[in-house]
Image (cartoon, rainbow, N blue to C red; front, side, top):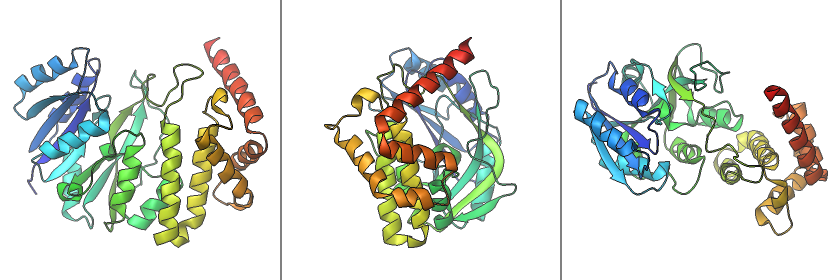
Length: 334
C-alpha cells in the first residue's frame, strides 16, 4: 500500500507551535504525503510562516481563508485533498515519525476504513500528563457498537487527529461548523456506516494541553459553548441508541447524565435563570431521570451524589463547587 495520505492541519495564530507540528509531519517514515496547511485567517504572522515552510518542502501546500473555525478549515482541506487517505493534526500537537507508517500497515488488514493510533497528553513543557484514553496492550479491532459503548463510558477517543480514514468516507460527510465537540458528532455518524475501527497501542500522537484552550474559561462569567454542544450531542446519542442500539440504553443515559453534570458544574451562576431555556431543559432531564441516576451502574458514587444535589438545589451546589475550586486554585498558587 503506497497510496498517498493527505494530512490536513488547520492553522490559526499558531506561530509559537506550528513549526514543531509541521516538522513532525514532514519527518514521517511514510513519505508519500501531502501536507495541507489551511490558514484560517491568522493575524499574527502564522500565514507567512506557512509560506516559508512550504518553500522548504514540496509536499506542503498552503491555503488562506477567512476565519471560520477549525471545522471550516478542515472541510476546506478535505475538498482540496488528493490522497486516498486523510489524516488530521492540530497545530498545537506533534506526532512520532512512524505514526502514519504504522497506520498504513494496519490499514492493509483492516476490516473497516478507519485505523486509530493511541495518544498521550503533555503539558507545554513536554511533561507527561495522565492518559485520557488508555491504549490497548495490543492492536485490536473494535466493532462499531463496542466503540460507541466506549464513547458512552468516556473511555473512547473521538478525535480525528488520531485516525487515518479512507477518503471515500468523507464523500457525504463533513465536520459540523459553528460548534465544538465536532469530532464526536462526525465520528458517531461514520460509526453507523462501518464495521468498526482498528486501534493500535503505540502512543504516537502527542496532545499538547495549553492553558489557553478553547474549553477554558477566561473570566468567572465566560462560558465555552462546548458545554452546550456536549449536551446536544448526548441527546443525539440517546436518540440513536433508542433507535438502533437498544442494548446500549443504560450507557446512553449514563452519558447524558454525565454531560449534564459537566454543564451544570461550569455554567456561570448568573446564567442559571428561568429565562435560560437550555438550562431549564438540563434541569428537566435530571428531574425525569432521578431513578436512573440512583440505579445506573455506570455512574460513580460521587457522580450520583452531585447529580442528586444538583437536581434539588442547582444554584447552591454550583456556588459551593465554585468556592471549592477557588480554594484549591489559591492553595496551588500559594
